[in-house]
Image (cartoon, rainbow, N blue to C red; front, side, top):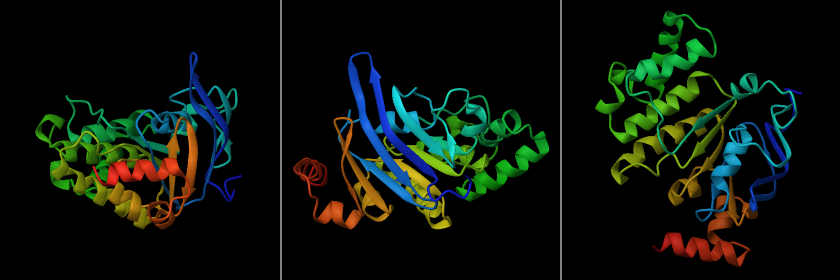
Length: 248
């Protein structure tokens, strides 16, 4: 099923934490090379959706397939499946005692069993890809927040995933550092990377994606091309949210 028309398929995804139902039947189809932008108020379930896609959170029920592999099935080899899914978090989650190159190369050695030489060669290529070739020997504490996030992106890219998930990748950054991270994400889009991006950066949502999903209360309230969502949203909840964030 590697030639399936959809790279990511979600059907009837529910997630509850005790009595709190956070996701209420999400369904989504994402084609290869497509960039999906997920927007919505805090607490709407956006991050939980991403964390369920790669099984960092266990879905309560529903089906998730990535490149034809059902991640929600019992007995699925999650470690193998996750190699196809890169994830970039709000926090950079870098190892402070390792250099930038060491952080990128570690997963290659541990997950792909590469030799140190092979891992570091690919790691340097990934750092160059995100504009940090000159920071390979720097430790996280010597890097700005934006640079640390780009190292985190390089680390995810190093495993050559088919799908990249971004969970508010710029929310922990000072405003002047946001642009560098968004430039890398735009480059990935232009290279054809399939991405699902949760973000509050409305400029990126407008021009960075093929489709925008507006989530509220654990549901996809509305989805469509950015031009439609931003210029002529169909739902009152979408209009109220955009009015609030665009005129804040």
